[in-house]
Image 1 (cartoon, rainbow, N blue to C red):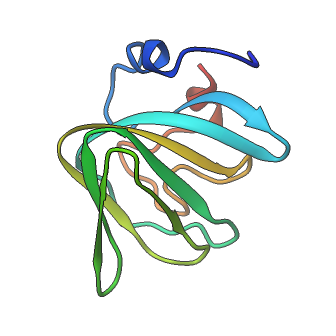
Image 2 (image 1 turned 180 degrees about the horizontal axis):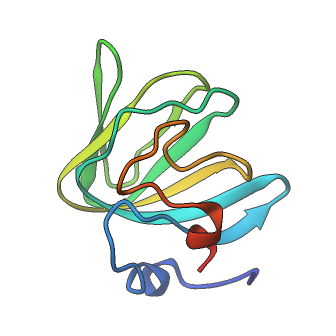
Length: 121
């Protein structure tokens, strides 16, 4: 895994929506990028927080009783154990930081779920 790179160039290599790619590791955390468009599944990460940072575009994070709208340059941390569902009307470029062992869609398995091996490719 590299210690440097151009984030815009790396986003150009992402072909599928909701398919995170691991671009770096920092201590016990992975830095991931993904393109969002449409709806993700409702899920939670029972033992870890997840940080979302919007590089380009905007998207909503649906929580139980509120919708958080994030625009370019915004970030939000979903605390561990909180069910959430990201949704993006148009294509958005998002960077995420989470523990290495965090599963893509928590304990929910769907047709968009990616294993860590798939995220490392």
